[in-house]
Image 1 (spheres, rainbow, N blue to C red):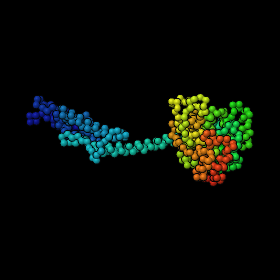
Image 2: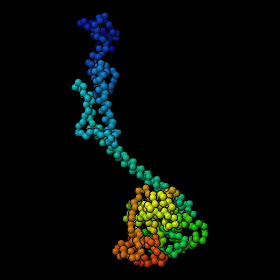
Image 3: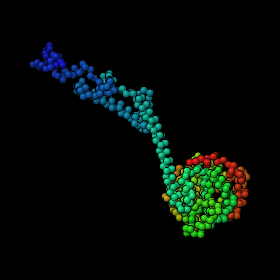
Image 4: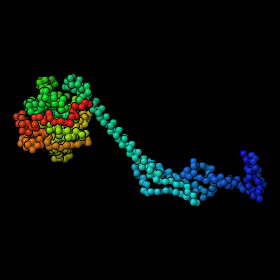
Length: 469
Protein backbone atom coordinates (compact mmCIF):
# COMPACT_ATOMS: atom_id res chain seq x y z
CA UNK A 1 0.00 0.00 0.00
CA UNK A 2 1.35 3.39 -0.99
CA UNK A 3 2.20 5.78 1.78
CA UNK A 4 1.94 9.53 1.40
CA UNK A 5 5.23 11.32 2.04
CA UNK A 6 5.73 14.96 3.13
CA UNK A 7 7.92 16.98 0.67
CA UNK A 8 8.56 20.58 -0.36
CA UNK A 9 7.12 21.68 -3.68
CA UNK A 10 7.65 25.17 -5.01
CA UNK A 11 8.05 26.71 -1.58
CA UNK A 12 5.00 24.97 -0.02
CA UNK A 13 4.72 21.73 1.79
CA UNK A 14 2.48 19.05 0.31
CA UNK A 15 1.58 15.43 0.81
CA UNK A 16 2.53 13.11 -2.07
CA UNK A 17 2.56 9.36 -2.62
CA UNK A 18 6.04 7.88 -2.38
CA UNK A 19 5.01 4.24 -2.38
CA UNK A 20 6.67 3.82 1.01
CA UNK A 21 5.21 2.79 4.32
CA UNK A 22 6.74 5.66 6.17
CA UNK A 23 6.24 9.43 6.29
CA UNK A 24 9.01 11.95 5.75
CA UNK A 25 8.82 15.41 7.31
CA UNK A 26 10.54 18.45 5.90
CA UNK A 27 11.90 21.21 8.09
CA UNK A 28 10.17 24.02 6.21
CA UNK A 29 7.72 25.95 8.44
CA UNK A 30 5.39 26.83 5.52
CA UNK A 31 3.39 23.64 5.35
CA UNK A 32 -0.12 22.32 4.72
CA UNK A 33 -1.42 20.71 7.89
CA UNK A 34 -2.60 17.10 7.74
CA UNK A 35 -6.26 17.85 8.54
CA UNK A 36 -6.42 20.35 5.66
CA UNK A 37 -4.89 17.85 3.31
CA UNK A 38 -7.38 15.19 4.47
CA UNK A 39 -10.31 17.55 3.86
CA UNK A 40 -9.15 18.18 0.29
CA UNK A 41 -8.68 14.46 -0.31
CA UNK A 42 -12.15 13.64 0.94
CA UNK A 43 -13.60 16.36 -1.27
CA UNK A 44 -11.93 14.76 -4.29
CA UNK A 45 -13.41 11.37 -3.31
CA UNK A 46 -16.92 12.95 -3.52
CA UNK A 47 -18.20 11.79 -0.13
CA UNK A 48 -21.02 14.33 0.01
CA UNK A 49 -24.29 12.57 0.84
CA UNK A 50 -25.75 13.13 4.31
CA UNK A 51 -29.37 11.94 4.03
CA UNK A 52 -31.09 8.60 3.78
CA UNK A 53 -33.38 10.23 1.25
CA UNK A 54 -30.48 10.73 -1.15
CA UNK A 55 -28.18 8.21 -2.77
CA UNK A 56 -28.25 4.43 -2.66
CA UNK A 57 -27.76 2.83 0.74
CA UNK A 58 -26.22 5.98 2.24
CA UNK A 59 -26.36 6.50 5.98
CA UNK A 60 -25.04 9.17 8.25
CA UNK A 61 -21.46 8.42 9.30
CA UNK A 62 -19.30 10.36 11.70
CA UNK A 63 -16.44 10.38 9.22
CA UNK A 64 -18.62 12.15 6.62
CA UNK A 65 -18.72 15.26 8.78
CA UNK A 66 -15.05 15.83 8.03
CA UNK A 67 -16.09 17.24 4.69
CA UNK A 68 -16.81 20.68 6.18
CA UNK A 69 -15.56 22.67 9.07
CA UNK A 70 -16.88 25.44 11.27
CA UNK A 71 -20.33 26.81 11.99
CA UNK A 72 -21.60 26.60 8.42
CA UNK A 73 -20.94 22.84 8.27
CA UNK A 74 -22.76 22.25 11.58
CA UNK A 75 -25.85 24.22 10.45
CA UNK A 76 -25.82 22.38 7.15
CA UNK A 77 -25.89 18.96 8.83
CA UNK A 78 -28.55 20.09 11.32
CA UNK A 79 -30.77 21.31 8.48
CA UNK A 80 -30.48 18.00 6.66
CA UNK A 81 -31.26 15.93 9.76
CA UNK A 82 -34.24 18.13 10.70
CA UNK A 83 -35.74 17.78 7.24
CA UNK A 84 -35.30 14.02 7.37
CA UNK A 85 -36.96 13.77 10.81
CA UNK A 86 -39.92 15.85 9.64
CA UNK A 87 -40.37 13.61 6.64
CA UNK A 88 -40.14 10.42 8.73
CA UNK A 89 -42.56 11.77 11.36
CA UNK A 90 -45.16 12.57 8.72
CA UNK A 91 -44.89 9.06 7.33
CA UNK A 92 -45.33 7.49 10.79
CA UNK A 93 -48.33 9.68 11.52
CA UNK A 94 -49.96 8.60 8.29
CA UNK A 95 -49.45 4.95 9.20
CA UNK A 96 -50.69 5.02 12.78
CA UNK A 97 -53.08 7.94 13.24
CA UNK A 98 -55.93 6.17 11.47
CA UNK A 99 -58.57 7.99 13.50
CA UNK A 100 -57.82 11.06 11.38
CA UNK A 101 -56.98 13.24 14.36
CA UNK A 102 -53.84 14.18 12.41
CA UNK A 103 -55.11 15.68 9.18
CA UNK A 104 -52.99 16.07 6.07
CA UNK A 105 -53.97 19.02 3.81
CA UNK A 106 -55.77 17.73 0.75
CA UNK A 107 -53.73 18.34 -2.36
CA UNK A 108 -52.80 16.47 -5.47
CA UNK A 109 -49.06 16.98 -5.29
CA UNK A 110 -47.46 18.14 -2.03
CA UNK A 111 -43.73 17.84 -1.48
CA UNK A 112 -41.52 18.92 1.41
CA UNK A 113 -38.05 19.92 0.24
CA UNK A 114 -34.99 21.41 1.86
CA UNK A 115 -32.28 22.83 -0.34
CA UNK A 116 -28.82 24.13 0.43
CA UNK A 117 -26.78 25.83 -2.29
CA UNK A 118 -29.13 24.58 -4.96
CA UNK A 119 -28.84 20.93 -3.94
CA UNK A 120 -31.97 19.00 -2.93
CA UNK A 121 -31.42 16.92 0.18
CA UNK A 122 -34.97 15.75 1.14
CA UNK A 123 -37.80 14.94 -1.23
CA UNK A 124 -40.65 13.08 0.50
CA UNK A 125 -43.92 12.71 -1.39
CA UNK A 126 -46.93 13.01 0.92
CA UNK A 127 -49.08 11.25 -1.64
CA UNK A 128 -47.38 8.08 -0.42
CA UNK A 129 -48.30 9.02 3.15
CA UNK A 130 -51.91 9.59 2.21
CA UNK A 131 -52.14 6.29 0.36
CA UNK A 132 -50.55 4.42 3.25
CA UNK A 133 -52.99 6.06 5.65
CA UNK A 134 -56.00 5.14 3.51
CA UNK A 135 -54.85 1.55 3.09
CA UNK A 136 -54.20 1.26 6.82
CA UNK A 137 -57.66 2.67 7.60
CA UNK A 138 -59.36 0.16 5.34
CA UNK A 139 -57.31 -2.69 6.77
CA UNK A 140 -58.05 -1.72 10.38
CA UNK A 141 -61.75 -1.17 9.57
CA UNK A 142 -62.00 -4.63 8.05
CA UNK A 143 -60.16 -6.17 10.97
CA UNK A 144 -62.46 -4.38 13.43
CA UNK A 145 -65.54 -5.71 11.63
CA UNK A 146 -64.12 -9.23 11.69
CA UNK A 147 -63.36 -8.97 15.41
CA UNK A 148 -66.88 -7.70 16.13
CA UNK A 149 -68.36 -10.62 14.18
CA UNK A 150 -66.26 -13.14 16.12
CA UNK A 151 -67.12 -11.46 19.44
CA UNK A 152 -70.83 -11.68 18.66
CA UNK A 153 -70.55 -15.35 17.74
CA UNK A 154 -68.65 -16.07 20.96
CA UNK A 155 -71.24 -14.13 22.97
CA UNK A 156 -74.08 -16.10 21.40
CA UNK A 157 -72.32 -19.39 22.17
CA UNK A 158 -71.70 -18.34 25.76
CA UNK A 159 -75.40 -17.50 26.19
CA UNK A 160 -76.39 -20.88 24.75
CA UNK A 161 -73.93 -22.65 27.02
CA UNK A 162 -75.19 -20.85 30.12
CA UNK A 163 -78.74 -21.57 29.03
CA UNK A 164 -78.02 -25.27 28.60
CA UNK A 165 -76.41 -25.48 32.04
CA UNK A 166 -79.25 -23.59 33.73
CA UNK A 167 -81.77 -25.70 31.82
CA UNK A 168 -80.29 -28.95 33.07
CA UNK A 169 -80.06 -27.68 36.64
CA UNK A 170 -83.69 -26.53 36.56
CA UNK A 171 -84.89 -29.92 35.39
CA UNK A 172 -82.76 -32.11 37.62
CA UNK A 173 -83.39 -30.10 40.79
CA UNK A 174 -87.18 -29.93 40.32
CA UNK A 175 -88.86 -32.80 42.16
CA UNK A 176 -92.20 -31.90 40.59
CA UNK A 177 -91.00 -32.88 37.11
CA UNK A 178 -91.55 -36.55 36.46
CA UNK A 179 -88.72 -38.95 35.68
CA UNK A 180 -90.30 -39.56 32.29
CA UNK A 181 -89.89 -35.92 31.37
CA UNK A 182 -86.27 -36.01 32.54
CA UNK A 183 -85.59 -39.03 30.38
CA UNK A 184 -87.11 -37.28 27.38
CA UNK A 185 -84.88 -34.32 28.11
CA UNK A 186 -81.79 -36.49 27.80
CA UNK A 187 -82.53 -36.97 24.11
CA UNK A 188 -82.36 -34.27 21.45
CA UNK A 189 -85.37 -31.95 21.70
CA UNK A 190 -87.54 -31.05 18.77
CA UNK A 191 -88.49 -27.52 17.86
CA UNK A 192 -91.83 -26.05 18.88
CA UNK A 193 -93.60 -22.94 17.75
CA UNK A 194 -95.06 -21.71 21.03
CA UNK A 195 -95.61 -22.83 24.60
CA UNK A 196 -98.75 -21.53 26.33
CA UNK A 197 -98.82 -21.63 30.11
CA UNK A 198 -102.26 -21.09 31.65
CA UNK A 199 -101.82 -19.68 35.12
CA UNK A 200 -104.16 -21.41 37.54
CA UNK A 201 -104.67 -22.06 41.26
CA UNK A 202 -105.81 -24.93 43.47
CA UNK A 203 -109.29 -23.43 43.78
CA UNK A 204 -109.80 -22.93 40.04
CA UNK A 205 -110.96 -26.40 38.98
CA UNK A 206 -114.15 -25.06 37.37
CA UNK A 207 -112.20 -22.44 35.45
CA UNK A 208 -109.91 -25.11 34.07
CA UNK A 209 -112.87 -27.22 33.00
CA UNK A 210 -114.42 -24.21 31.22
CA UNK A 211 -111.17 -23.63 29.30
CA UNK A 212 -110.99 -27.31 28.34
CA UNK A 213 -114.56 -27.10 27.07
CA UNK A 214 -113.89 -24.08 24.84
CA UNK A 215 -110.56 -23.01 23.32
CA UNK A 216 -108.10 -25.65 24.64
CA UNK A 217 -108.00 -28.90 22.60
CA UNK A 218 -108.21 -32.10 24.61
CA UNK A 219 -106.79 -35.62 24.55
CA UNK A 220 -105.73 -36.72 21.07
CA UNK A 221 -106.36 -33.30 19.55
CA UNK A 222 -103.97 -31.69 22.01
CA UNK A 223 -101.35 -34.30 21.20
CA UNK A 224 -101.90 -33.71 17.48
CA UNK A 225 -101.57 -29.96 18.07
CA UNK A 226 -98.11 -30.50 19.56
CA UNK A 227 -96.94 -32.86 16.85
CA UNK A 228 -98.32 -31.09 13.78
CA UNK A 229 -98.36 -27.44 14.82
CA UNK A 230 -95.71 -27.33 17.52
CA UNK A 231 -98.10 -25.72 20.01
CA UNK A 232 -97.84 -26.85 23.64
CA UNK A 233 -100.56 -25.91 26.15
CA UNK A 234 -100.35 -26.61 29.89
CA UNK A 235 -102.02 -25.45 33.09
CA UNK A 236 -99.24 -24.07 35.29
CA UNK A 237 -99.31 -24.64 39.03
CA UNK A 238 -96.87 -25.20 41.87
CA UNK A 239 -97.51 -27.02 45.12
CA UNK A 240 -99.08 -26.16 48.44
CA UNK A 241 -97.25 -25.08 51.57
CA UNK A 242 -97.97 -28.55 52.94
CA UNK A 243 -96.17 -30.80 50.49
CA UNK A 244 -98.20 -33.93 49.69
CA UNK A 245 -101.34 -32.47 51.26
CA UNK A 246 -104.91 -32.66 50.03
CA UNK A 247 -104.47 -29.83 47.53
CA UNK A 248 -101.50 -31.47 45.85
CA UNK A 249 -103.30 -34.81 45.72
CA UNK A 250 -106.28 -33.20 44.01
CA UNK A 251 -104.02 -31.81 41.27
CA UNK A 252 -102.31 -35.18 40.89
CA UNK A 253 -105.68 -36.86 40.40
CA UNK A 254 -106.72 -34.27 37.84
CA UNK A 255 -103.41 -34.73 36.04
CA UNK A 256 -104.04 -38.46 35.70
CA UNK A 257 -107.32 -37.71 33.92
CA UNK A 258 -106.23 -34.92 31.59
CA UNK A 259 -102.43 -34.94 31.53
CA UNK A 260 -102.31 -31.19 30.88
CA UNK A 261 -100.40 -29.78 33.89
CA UNK A 262 -96.95 -28.28 34.28
CA UNK A 263 -95.99 -28.58 37.92
CA UNK A 264 -93.49 -26.05 39.20
CA UNK A 265 -91.07 -26.05 42.12
CA UNK A 266 -92.99 -23.18 43.65
CA UNK A 267 -95.22 -22.56 46.65
CA UNK A 268 -98.57 -21.17 45.53
CA UNK A 269 -99.82 -17.83 46.87
CA UNK A 270 -101.26 -14.63 45.42
CA UNK A 271 -98.32 -12.57 46.64
CA UNK A 272 -95.96 -15.02 44.94
CA UNK A 273 -97.14 -14.47 41.36
CA UNK A 274 -93.89 -12.77 40.36
CA UNK A 275 -91.87 -15.74 41.59
CA UNK A 276 -94.27 -18.13 39.86
CA UNK A 277 -93.97 -16.26 36.56
CA UNK A 278 -90.18 -16.38 36.73
CA UNK A 279 -90.18 -20.10 37.57
CA UNK A 280 -92.66 -20.82 34.77
CA UNK A 281 -90.53 -19.25 32.04
CA UNK A 282 -87.36 -20.87 33.37
CA UNK A 283 -89.00 -24.30 33.48
CA UNK A 284 -90.78 -23.98 30.13
CA UNK A 285 -87.64 -23.00 28.22
CA UNK A 286 -85.87 -25.93 29.87
CA UNK A 287 -88.47 -28.46 28.73
CA UNK A 288 -89.47 -27.17 25.31
CA UNK A 289 -87.31 -25.48 22.70
CA UNK A 290 -89.87 -23.06 21.31
CA UNK A 291 -89.83 -19.76 19.48
CA UNK A 292 -92.31 -18.06 21.83
CA UNK A 293 -93.49 -18.52 25.41
CA UNK A 294 -96.91 -17.20 26.48
CA UNK A 295 -98.50 -16.70 29.85
CA UNK A 296 -102.31 -16.36 30.06
CA UNK A 297 -104.77 -16.40 32.96
CA UNK A 298 -107.40 -19.15 33.25
CA UNK A 299 -110.28 -16.66 32.97
CA UNK A 300 -109.30 -15.33 29.51
CA UNK A 301 -110.58 -16.52 26.14
CA UNK A 302 -107.94 -17.14 23.46
CA UNK A 303 -108.14 -17.74 19.70
CA UNK A 304 -105.14 -20.01 19.10
CA UNK A 305 -104.84 -19.63 15.31
CA UNK A 306 -105.01 -15.83 15.54
CA UNK A 307 -102.43 -15.87 18.34
CA UNK A 308 -100.14 -18.06 16.23
CA UNK A 309 -100.37 -15.85 13.15
CA UNK A 310 -99.75 -12.75 15.27
CA UNK A 311 -96.58 -14.23 16.75
CA UNK A 312 -95.44 -15.55 13.36
CA UNK A 313 -95.21 -11.98 12.14
CA UNK A 314 -92.44 -11.31 14.71
CA UNK A 315 -90.47 -14.55 14.53
CA UNK A 316 -87.48 -12.96 12.78
CA UNK A 317 -86.91 -10.56 15.68
CA UNK A 318 -84.53 -11.82 18.37
CA UNK A 319 -86.01 -10.22 21.52
CA UNK A 320 -89.76 -9.57 21.43
CA UNK A 321 -92.01 -8.65 24.35
CA UNK A 322 -95.63 -8.57 23.21
CA UNK A 323 -98.86 -7.61 24.94
CA UNK A 324 -101.19 -4.73 25.64
CA UNK A 325 -98.76 -2.17 26.98
CA UNK A 326 -99.92 0.04 29.84
CA UNK A 327 -98.49 2.40 32.44
CA UNK A 328 -100.75 2.39 35.48
CA UNK A 329 -100.34 4.39 38.68
CA UNK A 330 -98.03 3.22 41.45
CA UNK A 331 -100.35 2.64 44.43
CA UNK A 332 -98.64 3.57 47.66
CA UNK A 333 -101.60 3.28 50.04
CA UNK A 334 -101.74 0.02 51.97
CA UNK A 335 -104.81 -2.15 51.83
CA UNK A 336 -105.80 -1.33 48.24
CA UNK A 337 -105.68 -3.86 45.42
CA UNK A 338 -102.38 -3.89 43.53
CA UNK A 339 -100.61 -2.03 46.37
CA UNK A 340 -96.91 -1.57 45.62
CA UNK A 341 -94.80 -1.85 48.82
CA UNK A 342 -91.74 -0.54 46.98
CA UNK A 343 -93.54 2.51 45.62
CA UNK A 344 -90.66 4.77 46.70
CA UNK A 345 -88.46 3.27 43.99
CA UNK A 346 -90.67 4.83 41.33
CA UNK A 347 -90.20 8.42 42.46
CA UNK A 348 -92.72 10.77 44.01
CA UNK A 349 -96.14 9.63 45.19
CA UNK A 350 -98.56 9.65 42.27
CA UNK A 351 -96.01 8.56 39.67
CA UNK A 352 -96.77 5.88 37.13
CA UNK A 353 -95.06 2.62 36.22
CA UNK A 354 -92.88 2.21 33.16
CA UNK A 355 -94.58 0.68 30.12
CA UNK A 356 -95.28 -3.03 30.53
CA UNK A 357 -97.70 -5.63 29.20
CA UNK A 358 -100.91 -6.21 31.11
CA UNK A 359 -100.90 -9.47 33.04
CA UNK A 360 -103.89 -11.23 31.43
CA UNK A 361 -101.81 -12.35 28.43
CA UNK A 362 -98.31 -11.61 27.19
CA UNK A 363 -95.70 -13.35 25.05
CA UNK A 364 -91.92 -13.29 24.94
CA UNK A 365 -89.43 -14.74 22.48
CA UNK A 366 -86.99 -17.52 23.30
CA UNK A 367 -84.03 -15.19 23.94
CA UNK A 368 -85.93 -13.41 26.71
CA UNK A 369 -87.16 -16.64 28.27
CA UNK A 370 -83.57 -17.92 28.27
CA UNK A 371 -82.43 -14.65 29.85
CA UNK A 372 -84.94 -15.17 32.68
CA UNK A 373 -83.80 -18.76 33.18
CA UNK A 374 -80.12 -17.82 33.38
CA UNK A 375 -80.66 -14.86 35.72
CA UNK A 376 -83.62 -16.12 37.75
CA UNK A 377 -81.69 -15.97 41.02
CA UNK A 378 -80.96 -12.24 40.74
CA UNK A 379 -84.10 -10.86 39.09
CA UNK A 380 -86.01 -8.63 41.49
CA UNK A 381 -89.68 -9.36 42.17
CA UNK A 382 -92.23 -6.59 42.64
CA UNK A 383 -95.69 -7.13 44.11
CA UNK A 384 -97.36 -7.31 40.69
CA UNK A 385 -96.09 -9.97 38.28
CA UNK A 386 -96.71 -7.94 35.13
CA UNK A 387 -94.63 -5.08 36.57
CA UNK A 388 -91.88 -7.53 37.50
CA UNK A 389 -91.71 -8.93 33.97
CA UNK A 390 -91.47 -5.45 32.49
CA UNK A 391 -88.76 -4.53 35.02
CA UNK A 392 -86.64 -7.54 34.04
CA UNK A 393 -86.37 -6.20 30.51
CA UNK A 394 -85.47 -2.63 31.46
CA UNK A 395 -82.00 -1.91 30.12
CA UNK A 396 -82.14 -4.73 27.56
CA UNK A 397 -82.39 -4.27 23.81
CA UNK A 398 -86.00 -5.51 23.66
CA UNK A 399 -88.72 -4.64 21.18
CA UNK A 400 -91.98 -3.85 22.96
CA UNK A 401 -94.95 -4.76 20.75
CA UNK A 402 -98.22 -3.13 21.78
CA UNK A 403 -100.98 -5.14 20.08
CA UNK A 404 -104.51 -4.27 21.21
CA UNK A 405 -105.90 -7.50 19.76
CA UNK A 406 -104.44 -9.20 22.82
CA UNK A 407 -106.84 -7.37 25.16
CA UNK A 408 -110.25 -7.10 23.53
CA UNK A 409 -113.37 -6.75 25.63
CA UNK A 410 -116.08 -9.40 25.89
CA UNK A 411 -119.17 -9.15 23.64
CA UNK A 412 -120.20 -6.96 22.06
CA UNK A 413 -116.64 -5.57 21.64
CA UNK A 414 -114.93 -8.74 20.40
CA UNK A 415 -118.02 -9.71 18.41
CA UNK A 416 -118.08 -6.47 16.44
CA UNK A 417 -114.39 -6.80 15.67
CA UNK A 418 -114.85 -10.40 14.53
CA UNK A 419 -117.68 -9.37 12.20
CA UNK A 420 -115.40 -6.69 10.74
CA UNK A 421 -112.76 -9.34 10.02
CA UNK A 422 -110.45 -8.26 12.84
CA UNK A 423 -110.60 -11.31 15.09
CA UNK A 424 -109.24 -10.79 18.60
CA UNK A 425 -106.43 -12.84 20.07
CA UNK A 426 -107.75 -12.62 23.63
CA UNK A 427 -110.92 -11.31 25.26
CA UNK A 428 -111.71 -10.44 28.87
CA UNK A 429 -113.34 -7.75 31.03
CA UNK A 430 -111.02 -5.05 32.28
CA UNK A 431 -113.08 -4.41 35.42
CA UNK A 432 -112.64 -8.03 36.50
CA UNK A 433 -109.07 -8.43 35.14
CA UNK A 434 -110.52 -11.43 33.29
CA UNK A 435 -113.92 -12.61 32.12
CA UNK A 436 -116.39 -11.83 34.86
CA UNK A 437 -117.94 -15.11 36.08
CA UNK A 438 -115.79 -16.90 33.53
CA UNK A 439 -117.12 -20.38 34.38
CA UNK A 440 -120.55 -19.23 33.21
CA UNK A 441 -119.69 -16.79 30.43
CA UNK A 442 -116.60 -18.10 28.65
CA UNK A 443 -118.69 -20.42 26.49
CA UNK A 444 -120.75 -17.43 25.31
CA UNK A 445 -117.58 -15.51 24.51
CA UNK A 446 -116.24 -18.49 22.60
CA UNK A 447 -119.38 -18.82 20.49
CA UNK A 448 -119.67 -15.11 19.67
CA UNK A 449 -116.00 -14.14 19.38
CA UNK A 450 -114.27 -17.38 18.56
CA UNK A 451 -112.51 -18.04 15.26
CA UNK A 452 -113.57 -20.70 12.78
CA UNK A 453 -113.37 -24.24 14.15
CA UNK A 454 -110.98 -25.31 11.39
CA UNK A 455 -108.82 -22.18 11.55
CA UNK A 456 -106.23 -23.73 13.83
CA UNK A 457 -105.78 -26.89 11.74
CA UNK A 458 -105.78 -25.11 8.38
CA UNK A 459 -103.32 -22.39 9.36
CA UNK A 460 -99.72 -22.90 8.25
CA UNK A 461 -97.24 -21.37 10.71
CA UNK A 462 -94.49 -21.37 8.01
CA UNK A 463 -93.63 -25.02 8.68
CA UNK A 464 -90.90 -24.23 11.20
CA UNK A 465 -92.17 -26.34 14.04
CA UNK A 466 -91.09 -29.74 12.66
CA UNK A 467 -87.39 -29.04 12.34
CA UNK A 468 -85.09 -30.70 14.84
CA UNK A 469 -82.50 -28.93 16.90
